[in-house]
Image (cartoon, rainbow, N blue to C red):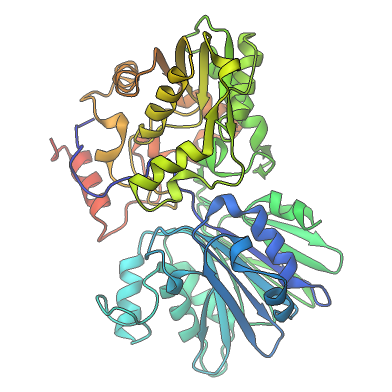
Length: 498
């Protein structure tokens, strides 16, 4: 690995999740409120904006804004969104900025007058190609034209999809034409106000599940959103599958051959612990990772404590395997969002102090094993260790429930530039040397990562069916064009970047 500390785009201090999508087809039910609660369950997947589109067969009404789900919607807004079908989205920005225009669902009207609303979870690797096509067709403004609509990949897809609905064509016909041409990680949810459509990319990078309601159907990014609205899990939407739901039932067809590459980081950090992905409970996977982590560089300590909340299941597994007592050594303010959503370093630093507070009586004079899910830049861990030592901790041994993050993700999780990742600052590919370099930088007494083989085995998925590009640099979907960080990765992999 190379020292690239001054190259390309700054990374967030922690992993930033991709978006969450939710859809419901349930005539006679309050679909807007069902969607609201579904989005509430998916809030962890994106905290910059939220929106709901509701269709009543004749029209689609979209309400969206920046902010958390609970900030965007209130009772009066939801009461005004009446219909039989709804799609919802909670967003963080990977393509396009964090502005109202980029909040989803996107709305378009086709040449034949059909309304279309679309929501998207993931990132496209042929976005530039699709954008050029949309600009040439004058469906979106040319690049660099400000204040004239969204710049996101979702806006481009929705424009192209609506444009294909001409005289005699339906939204189903249009999706059959467009979906095989879209490359990358995507879960699409879309509607014409009558039928609910959902599609998952041929690699199945992001999860998507189908649930049954009394009198209706639900599709959601995670099974926890099915649970919150009282829907029973039916099955996962398959990679490369398009489904549509109307009064005649659920219909399905394949639009591409399948080559599975499910994101392993869903098991480590992104998904809620109470969700089930590909038959494996996320909570169980994280506990098992913690058990395996306990056998990496064992340490004599007084207690095991998590960095709440994402480190908690792994810390429980670590404590069970090691026999070291588990205790909560830090209290989390439940009303403060994840610190990475703040737009500046100053606010991020303040956010950490507001969010976590050490419990002095638990940690004072103790040797601690502190379990966290991952390290990106290391700033959060550095501040936490300082806080723990100020509160009287005797020793702080950090254990990470994933391997070192060494590569950016182009499929929906924002790790940004290789040069901003702390694992790349040591001029070495040796896992032990990387851990020692990071230990020194964050000020821990010891530091260990779970081996990638143990992480994958804990997911109970076949290695060949998983994407672990952020750890290995092996990108199963390829790299996007026109992306500075992707160009940098290409140069590194060719050995052109020293």
